[in-house]
Image 1 (cartoon, helix red, strand yellow):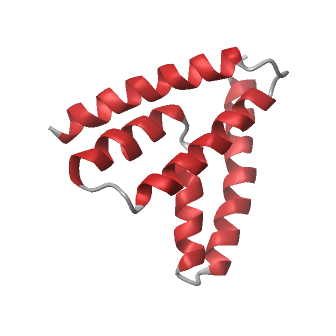
Image 2 (spheres, rainbow, N blue to C red):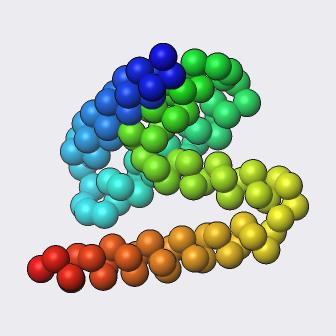
Length: 111
């Protein structure tokens, strides 16, 4: 059943991301920035408030469909909360550099 909740949440999150980003009267890439900012705030708010199937629907599904940056954000917060500052910093830097590099490499490779 958890997969059904995740699927439903992801569908709603993806539609919400598209609707919000296309309705914002701001230029590219600021729509994505706003969506990621909202996603980070939503997952932070929901993390300690939901349990069971609600987590699958809203955190894994909706936030995952809305923006995977929200998951990254809460993972960094968790590492910082655990006092694992070096890992948190490394994760942020490595994600920014390597994920952009992977996107650039495959973007250029498939041209």
